[in-house]
Image (tube, rainbow, N blue to C red; front, side, top):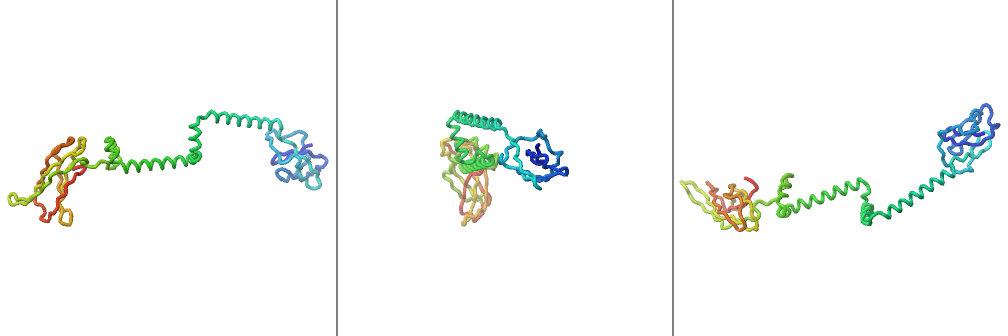
Length: 264
């Protein structure tokens, strides 16, 4: 007769005469569960169709029977043909993997090895690496923004869209023969500034707003005057006259500083 462990469903051969009417305590040698077996639990055939076949630790392992019951040998639950089929499938799959690997192009193999060595097989590492690359490119685009805009003028619109100044106002323009002098008109003291703006670059340059800053002897700003240019652009080698009148300039004016600004 056979008795089955109620927990792991391991089956054991046992003499039915050893099981009294009141039952006998048995211990499963596989899962160590102690259970009470009665004659009603004895079976001639397996009574657990849902039982999955599983390997036991050792075919010679025996069940422990308490109160004088004899040890019995557990039933073998793994079929040799099934195991043989499993190993054959694994062997076939391994051979297929080797064949597939031989067909992989060399370049793809190298890329795969690089990814593996850099840890890029993991999604988190790929995201971190991508973020680092984007940050690095951002630094390059920011540090070399003026050179980039000189080469690719349309990039200035992209920089402006993100609030980054990438163009030097009046780049390529220069002041020439700038002079200034004081005079009075109707008893009102005035300061006249004259000179030229010349285009020393080899390309057409937009003329930005002109700013004049009057400074004292300590180079502190006293007055600021902005003036729109009389022309919008200057051709290569071209020049335009500059004339500005500052009414009631500070008597402390010692220096005049001229530059260009982005807008008026």
